[in-house]
Image (cartoon, one colour):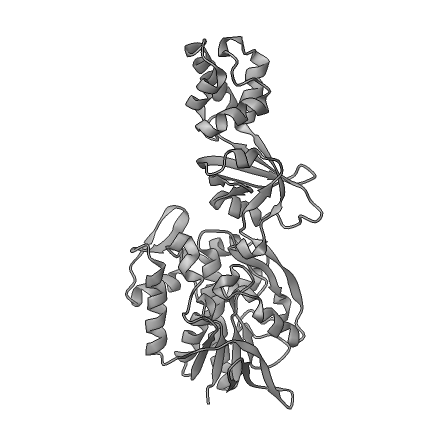
Length: 415
């Protein structure tokens, strides 16, 4: 008889299975897909941003809510432990901008292969099946009901992910299991997701990628809810790219709030410096059309948009542009305004915000307060973070805590 069934073969599930097996438990990993870690293949654009090379306080600072719940798990299995694990499994790692940690090969497959090797060495049984429910006897946990068979066990770790990227198997199964146990579920919302814009401004610049730009997000009350610099992408529906994905994590109330994004094309230049630059360009190209001069200052696709937003005809000779018009152009370049309609569908989100209410889960063992022997890990919990490897760090840490907690439970130990 298996001691522990881990439901879900993603990052959290694999780590939970390993942590439990290394504590002497007999573990079966139940995964509905033919292969483990399908979502890992697409993280970090296929390179797998495994964690962030920082200390525990910095990890928690990058978790927008419920960060205190993660303190114990991340402290016990911090980024340095994640790095040591993969390097110990023969995967050299490198640290890039912003502390992002990747395999030196830039191949997510190396991370998945390392997990598989470790699971085999720990004698974790891997079974392809979908968990349909939990088996109870006299009100106590007795096993897992699968689509193809029943699996008796003493403990269960639910690590099924959220509902983002459903083609990877994240279809909300864990939410149904938790709901059946009577848990409170915070409604799933997209987090780290592209944004849809009003109007056709973004569509006119579709495919244009901007580096080193500034973004400021304001809500209906004109309060700044996010500000940062980085890279963004204009798409047919609106905005995407790392900077926008991070911004979306701060835009959590589209039902009651309207959000506006202001893009600073020249964040390194103060307004006075940029105005002198504009004046110099105008003097040196006095007889040229505005759109020709703007192409010296911004990407070609942006030239007609900047002229239009500034209220200046694109074919005006720059020698006829007034000081007031030049001021409007400067303000547009320092604050190109995009009205946001809402997020893209949750299926396109990198992670899911919402899930099992953390107040109902022990932060040390990931054991909920409903049914002894059940543990949660990863995205099924109401925890999510910003980009930069922090969400995978949450998966590793909560998976490790749940695996150890389940093994302790099976041995009758106190956590």
